[in-house]
Length: 308
Ligand code: CP
Ligand code: NVA
Image (tube, rainbow, N blue to C red; front, side, top):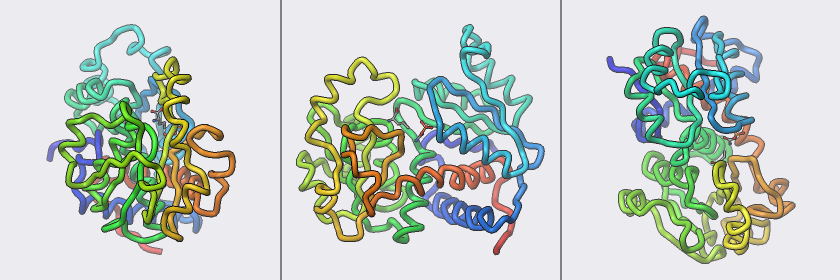
């Protein structure tokens, strides 16, 4: 069987994604009960980081240890990638030595190139275009708190960025509807919006966009690599801040998520992360469990038969 990659959410079928979320919940329950699952004993994950990270690095590294394996952190600064070794060659070499590779980089095309030349699974740990690992954690969190996302309405408020793009794909994969609320000029790419036209609605007014929905999600206004645009973006996005007052337009049991890191006073009000509707810490913690299920799925195939 050919190797499976996870470059976007569309690399797994809706059925596989559903099983993966349930496996993540199971692995979390077992881990919290002190049980040990080591399906990846002696397996190694290479982790290439061209951008900063706290959650992604810690969750992948801790996840590999908990599953019985280990990981190797590579940054361009101290690997040959930074001195111009081609991605094609790097992919072939890593394929000889480790069991999977996780990549956080700028260009999604570079990630695709690496995957093309890899004979081991390649995982997207964020590109300029997509952040699918975060979506696994977000969906797991929603399922834990409210059950299936099927038929629900979610509002993405803020920049039409990598997170928004992954939410667009998630809408089809997990069968929900997505309202996108962003200022003019900050929409996701037209091609993606056209491809998912049946799953998304663009609404400019934040209160209208949030009205009656079950989940509200936002992200930073300037992503990694957009630092020089910070001042302009701060002005353009000012009316799009998520606050408890805005959340009052959503359903009574609506949840609030943010992939973090957050900027209090910008995309979220000072008090939003601590609001009773915010599940951001649980969401961050679920990066660990969701990615453990993903690593197991990609490296050894279907999960071991386990139950509490
Ligand atoms: N949410 C997320 O990917 O966080 P890090 O940038 O800290 O990895
Ligand atoms: N959109 C953000 C997500 C960070 C996890 C970025 O790309 O910087």
